[in-house]
Length: 111
Length: 116
Image 1 (tube, chains in turn brown, red):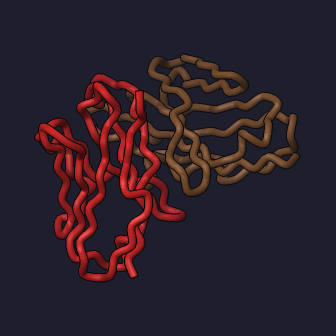
Image 2: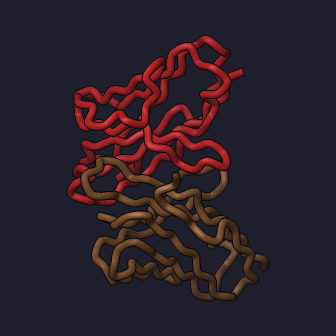
């Protein structure tokens, strides 16, 4: 079974609109990572969240980790075509050496 | 400060040949992780290495696959006697300290292996 579920699987928004994508874990996270990937390219690190209730922002992207550390949301304000891509959440779990990943949220921004 | 460097970017091998994928971590990073990405399946962990040591290889197939991270030089993921099912994008990530200390992991551009 998938340790991390990302929703929605794909999302199409008009340029200038806001969007939110989610990452839900089946167990308590040690840390939560958001990456962005464009087709055929590598993963670009966006941000890392560790503490329950933590919120971080970078330019127009804000990510939050809920108090129970089992869910994170990533919010993009006034989306641009440059925000298009696949957003991957990765999680570190207690007692584990690896980052597990969700299947990604595909975001399409229509000009 | 160069990022994580992977080469080659694209690799074509015939069935039965060997594939060698290289990963040079970011400067100052001594922890390396290898992942495989298939369409519709997402990123799958393969192996975690620290200089000269394999820390966790729980995601690596038992046969034909091996990984190393020597004291000098890049980390190598080696696939022997490749089969069509090995075709995928292979990504390497590096971090300054281990996962237990929870630090950022940065990814390379990947190597796209095609087995014909």
